[in-house]
Length: 280
Length: 214
Image (cartoon, rainbow over all chains, first blue to last red; front, side, top):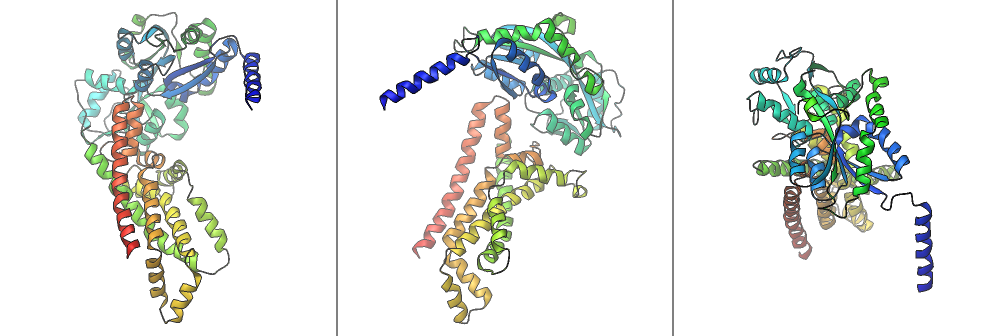
């Protein structure tokens, strides 16, 4: 019995060695936001990364809030998130080691064609929010501490309005796709990221009403979880992934993603820019 | 969390109502399946038993597609209301109650119903006596039905929308707090959900055991 176990274990070890790719710890946990997952971008990038570096990436798609919590508690190795002010706090608290600017896409304000608050074509997102508030038109909020939700709250704040508790302000606590569906059913306004909106456009009767304001930029950074705080984190893999995301070839793929299907790119590569360029 | 009372109350109301409706459907249907003799009985039973394993998300998806504005019942404007959750949870619990009712009555001695009829009982009186006879497993069916809906999240999320102050129930609130990274709050809510489920089952078990001693 004992002998058999030894044989089995050694055979298993041999098997592991035989198939082992280059890295000593091939498992890499990526915590990212639902928006990158839902758009399909990761389905393109991750196989490329895995093939090139030999890692197996376990992607956990959650809200930016949960993603950063995972990093904070050492349950993820690398983060791809879009909540810049929380990210800065995350780095300041020593939870992250490296942080690189990867790309941006933008938020849009969508709503039904009837547009009860009359915001179509307004340049400033803040002004549009003010009008929605004054009209008391139904507005869907994610309410899940995600990057999109935080962006929305920041816009309300800059409009000096507090919609919390209003009857027309509905909190879904769900992801972007599900929240868009709810907005569609209720003919309500909603702040959405363009990628998810375009991916779901065929099922929605919602139109883009406000776009292009610099305050609507949605900026993604890749963050490696600090190996000093969490020695068990796969820092080598995390750094490889971060470097992969800002490599020239990857950036080109990011810039072309979705071009064919939607007629416009879903993300704009930014590795050669700084935060200041994007108004952060 | 200030709305915790509201959320808990809605959870209880929705799941209790869904369980009651399931009972109104499942008790007669299960009785009919257990006592009736007709072609296709085994087939219907197999469908009901499969229904006991219906994944809540599948129910949620189908109910949502039915209730969406674009769906056949869209004009009733029920989607993202507590009623939508009640409908979905009824679809989940009704097969459980039906299947377990059928099983409970089928496990009674078949001579009992013949004897009752022979003694001059009406059909209604016979069914009533059988229900009384099988009250322990029937209460278990009730508990299983309630348990399947109070703990269900997939359908509530999809057809209710987890809208704060309107359709947020305990399970969807737990999912939300988890996705926010508020694990302590999620755990606290989970503990509350378990405590409530326990109290309700304790009460039902007490009734059941009291019945057993009589």
